Length: 298
Image (cartoon, rainbow, N blue to C red):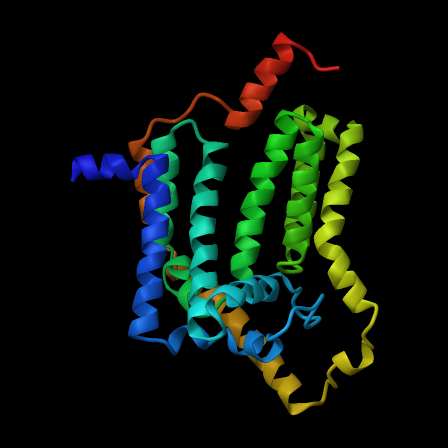
C-alpha cells in the first residue's frame, strides 16, 4: 500500500488516476445507469444537432460546441454526454494538480490535494449528474490561473496569445468566468512582481486571442431579436424558476457546508502532516523573481 500510495502521488499517478477514474464511470453509467447522466443534458439535447455561434442567452455555447465535436465522432446519444462530462472532469483534476504545483513546494502534496477532490461532496457526487457548463468553467478557471502565471513568468507573444485564447474560451464556458477574470486581474495589478505585464506591449495579443472564441457568439448575437428571449415576470414557469433559485440558495446556506466536512478533514490532516514552506511566493513567481534579480529584463 505504501508503494502504491507513493506511485499515485506523482505526476504520472495523478494523470493515470483521473483517466482511469473517469473511464470507470463512463463504462459504469453507460452500462448500468444511463438515465442519471441525462438530467442536466436535456436542455443541450434540445439545442443540439447542429453547430452554431450560439444557442441561448442564459449560457454561452462552449459546452454545446464541445458536445457537437464529440457527437461527430461517437454519434448523438448517451455515450457522447458521458465522454464529454468525464473528459472535462479528468481535465479539471489534472489541471488542478498543475495549478497546485504553481503554489506549493511539494509535488506529493499537490497530488494528494488533487486526489482529495473525490471527498468533496459537490465534486465527488453531484458533478456526476447535475452540472454541464460548470465543468467547462472549472477547467477554464484552472487553465486561466496556470496561463496567467506562465505569462507573468516569461512574457512572450505565444504565451500572451495562449492566455487570451483561454480567456475567450472561459467567457464562452459560463458568464461567471468574468468574475474570476476580474479578480485575477486585480490580484496581478496590485502585486509589483506581476504588475509589469500590463505595461508589456505583447499583452495586446491577449485581446487577439480572446476575440477568436468570442467572435462566433458575437456574430450570432447580432442576428437574434432579444425581446422574445425575455420571459414575462408573471409567467408560471418564470415564477417556478424564481422559487427554485430561492430554494437553492437556502440549501447552499444550510445544507451544503456540512457536505464539505470529509474534504476539510483531509485538508487539515495534510496541513498537519506536511511541513510548511518557508517561501511566500508561488513556485513560478519565486523562479521568476530570482531570475529577474539575476538578469533584469528590458
